[in-house]
Image (tube, rainbow, N blue to C red):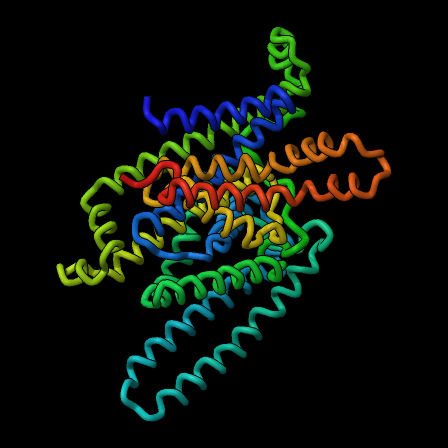
Length: 431
């Protein structure tokens, strides 16, 4: 059997070990988060592994996917729509038309010495008109039951529809960013993408009318049954008793297994599409551009357009993962989006697994997230064992036990260093 099979077998054995020694609820929670992390890793692998693009704005695309979940599945707040919903839409449409008008005028008066002055007057005037339309509407919306609502809500559609919409929102943002930033050198591209990512998070945190800002949107619909409904179902009670499982434990396990099945379906579909793309003429062209842009361009390949394509595709996959994550949590919490979790750890997953190899990217997502969760538990057990000879009030013992939480940073750094030392191209390198 191949090396890949044994690596995945070891990974599944580690998750099963958590089930046996901690709980199967924890094991399934880790498994679900591993799958979502693997999808994020696939998105980055499309950009970096296929085309060599260094994107540090992953967090922003993941957050847009989460925002899509609110927009699609949250129930609409009709009172908010009545007092300012249409006016907000009018303001946003006016703002978009103003930008398009500025672009048109800029091209139309090309060569004129008054061009900068005309554009400045147009944009400044449009800005004041935009704020005149927008601000009163937002103020009125945010006064509608601010403790529980204070925003427009969503469309009230099935939450699973938000997953492709999350990918679409991320793709649109990637197109806008790519049109501007993909002509930059790789290091400038990284700076530009992380800057735009922070802007996206800043908007989601501060525009309360959109998704309640830092007050969070909770109680989002689920694509799987609720535990309380299962616990009140006579059929479910019968089957849980038949298997000798407490009905409460059985309901939580069943819900997590449902999530696992849904997430695995998405992962397999995306993996199949990524493999088809990688092994197609398009995929071979992208690797040729990655390895030598000058040679590929001399053969007539439009490098910037191809980079834009792959940038959009990878960002869309990250957006889908972001929507899945918020669906699993059942709430949108903007303060949870930070670069360590949603950018740098994802990069570690890709590098560890093997950039350019989809199987490697998925494996990296599983390994890194597993250790990110479990190392603190393992570290606490080790610290407790190593300091068992000291008294309970020992300052050294207490210090070591309190330091167990930092073991995850040490462990991830150690794993990355060891892999780069002994497998520089990752655990499953590109063929």
